[in-house]
Image (cartoon, rainbow, N blue to C red; front, side, top):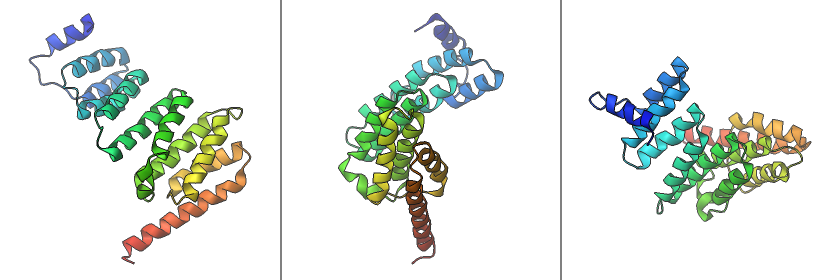
Length: 210
C-alpha cells in the first residue's frame, strides 16, 4: 500500500467513510483524478473482498481511467461465482466490454465466446443478457479494423445469434447499421431490423396479455 493511501486512510479513519461512487464523482467534478485514484485505493483497502466491493470497482475504476484495475475486479468476480452460471456469464460480458474499451479485442472475443458456448444461453434468448451478447459482438466488430478478421467474425456471431432465435432491440439498430455498412454487408441490416420488430411485437403481446 502506498504512503498516499495510508495517509488518506489515517486522516479519514474517524470520519464516516464515503462510498466509492461519492469518491469518483467528487474526483470527476473537481478534475482531480489522481486524488480520486488515491482515495479509491484507500476505500478498496478498507473493504472486504466480496462481490459488492468488486462490482463497484469494476464500474468505477474505468471512470478514473483505470481499466486494468477494473478488469482485475471483473476477473475476481467470475472466480467468486463458481456455481452461479447466469451471473458468471453476465460477468464475462462485462469483462468483454472492458476489453473492448481498451482495444484488447482478442480478449473481448474470448469473453464473448464463453457466453456463446454456454449450453444454457438459449434459455435466455428473450432476456436482456441475450441482447447484451449481441451488443458485445457488434461492439467488437465495430472496434476491429476492416482488415482484422475479428470484424467479420464478430458480426457473423451477432447474426448467428439472431438466426438461432436470440432477441434484439431497436436500440441496437444503429450499431448494426454502421457495422453492416462498414463491412459492405448492408443486406444483413434487414435481418437486424426484422429481429427488432419481432421482439417489439412479442413485448407488446405480453403487455396486452395475449
